[in-house]
Structure formats: structure tokens, C-alpha cells
Length: 234
Ligand code: CA
Image (cartoon, rainbow, N blue to C red; front, side):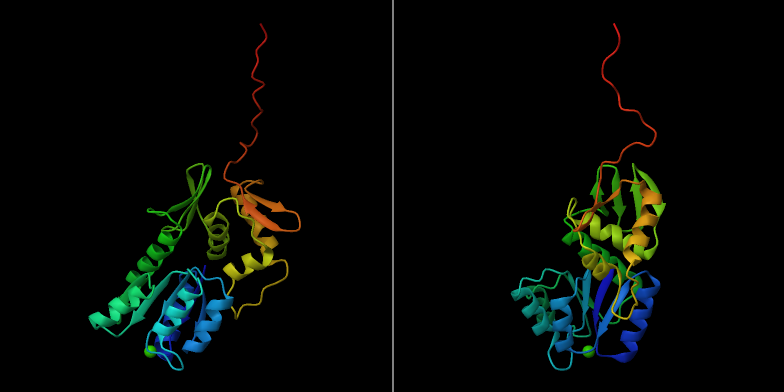
């Protein structure tokens, strides 16, 4: 999944990007409030990690503007400002959660999962339904309840497809969800990924909708099953 990191401190930004990437995130990192605004307007992020003390435009302004424009991306504020007024102001402006520096990286990951889950409308960690579910905590897919592990990109792909069941996502939308800015994306990268996923999930789990893109199917055909004719000879 793709995360926007807004952090002007080089050391914090670099170590946080590396830690997130090694946990399977695609990270777009910007260092000032203006760049954050344009990234938010263009990008499709699972979540935003927002520092408040930023050059060019304060984080609270970035947040207020994004919400005023109808952007509902979950925002987790990471800041050293520990005044009660600042915390309340941040939440009132539309932050989904607040974490004071310094924090434990594991806690950050857990809070990111929580704000994303809430946006997905799930009180627990499973999204999708029917035969095909995705566990946001363990990053496993469940095919008829049977769990298997996913690579970071496979997870990002399925998360995008299962977030709004039945929705058709274009190649560009999927690429935006799976890959960060710095990454070279081969023109057939999404096809290769989906080809691999069909082997894992079954051939009909991700359907191509000609000219439009792909959608996930949550009712899977049982392999090798013969349809019941329904009648019996008397
Ligand atoms: Ca700062």
C-alpha cells in the first residue's frame, strides 16, 4: 500500500521511509507543506503521516485544506507538539489519530492499520467478503477461510480491489495504489501481478473488465465441481 510521508526532518524522514518500506509500504516522502498539498491532490494514498511543523505551509493548514476539498484519506498526525490545544485543533481539523514524537515504530504501524480499517468501515481486521477476504493485520488472504501469505505488492493490489467490493479499478488506479514515485513500473507490471494472484486465488478471483480494468469476485467457483442438475430420475 502507498503512504504519503510529510516530514521536513531529514533524519526522521529517511529512517521512517526505510522502516516503512521494509514493512512492505510504498512511501512517497515530501518535506514541505506545499508539496504535501499537491501530493495529496494527485495521489491515491492508503494513509498520510503528517508532521505539523513544516516549511512553507503548516501541517494544520495542509490538513484543513485537504478536508475542505473533500479529501477523506486517513491522516495520522506525527508531531512533537504536545500541547493539549494543538492536539485538539489537529483532531478537529480532521486528523484521524495523533501520535507524539518520540513514538515506538510498532505503535505507529498499529495506528496506521487502525485508521485505514476505520476508513474501510470495518471494525475488525478483515475486508472483502464471501470466499475472498483480506486480513489487514496479518496481511494474509483468506480463500474460503484458508489463509495464505502475500507479498507487499499482492497485498496492495488486493487491498485496492476489496476495499469497495465490485468496484472496477483501472490500470492507472492500481498502479497508483501499488507503486511509489521513485519506482519504475513496467507497462505490464499489473498484468504480471494479477496473473500470479490468479494462480494463488483461483482463475476467476480477479476479473478483467474489457477496456475498463479489473474487479475482485468474492464468490468463487469450486474447482472441479459439477453443477448440481437438481433433478433425480424417478
Ligand atoms: Ca517538523
